[in-house]
Amino acid sequence: MINNRIEYQRMYEAERKLWWYQVLHRKILLQITNHFKVFNPRLKILDAACGTGGLLSFLKEKGYHNISGFDFSEHAIDFSLARDLDVSFGDLKNVNAFRPDETFDVICCNDALYFLTDTEIISALKIFRKRLNKDGIILINIHAFEAFSGTHDLAVGSSRRFTFEDFEVYLGLVNLNVKYKTYWPFLLSLPIWLVRIWQRRQIRKENLSTATPDSDVSYPGNFINSLLLRMMSLEETIFHTAPFGSSLFMVLKEK
Image (cartoon, rainbow, N blue to C red; front, side, top):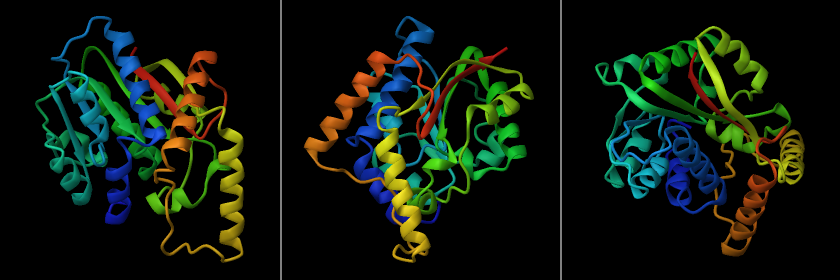
């Protein structure tokens, strides 16, 4: 996706209103609030591989102003700067090169680690831990379960999906503990799975192009979007953690 400006344009246009991004941003804010207890607008927050800056904009609106991000894509940086955010170039394969003298209270990395090899993921997590302030947290969201692979994966350049067991191996090597984890969206797992099965079948039949695939990042209209948001609110009310879903969300801290 790094060189796919069209996908970044779609992200830029959708991520402040699309249900999926709203739920993810809400999860992140909840974990920051739960962990630090007292609101502190001076918390230093880094969004690693920040995309077009939707999360940073959201946190800024919630009163956090000591926030910054980096991304490898010039398109992502352009869209983030259009939001008047403190975003510059950075590489998950070389996190230490980004403002090497700075440490952070919160480090977020959403749907980006799939670009890396296992060795590179371990290296990035080690550096995240070293760049944390005392009592800081790392928030990770990542594509989960190969059963949910589809055209979205092709469009964003994702070659694999993960389970928590994968991260258990990584975390055992980098001195990090899991404070909280959940798969999501659980209540929408079946329809998402059925859509992705249909997409894979269409690809095999060559009815869908793999040369220029489209992601799922598009606004479905106010009614459908509101309905999905209500379903996710119900899910969050019923389940503290969920056993299955197309994404894995984790809160990590130093042992």
